[in-house]
Image (tube, rainbow, N blue to C red; front, top):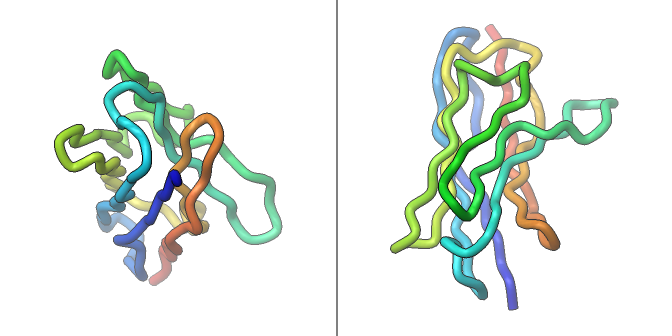
Length: 111
């Protein structure tokens, strides 16, 4: 059974940083495309970043240069480093594969 469990969210001031983690199980991480999406209050689901099975990384324009996606294949854990956070980054962040999504971790950016 595939499981994706996110953690690391919280309340942070504008300009601050957080690192999100996604502990994955039930499949081989290194053979799969994995990524992050987010949903802000009242808005549609938004793609944030993806790391491909070849290790290449892709970012939404809104997060390029501020966020960093990485993966530890030995631990089968996906990470998202969030830097220079803005109020508009406030959202529930979800880890996902092509066919599965976790329960999410809340990131709130507020002064």
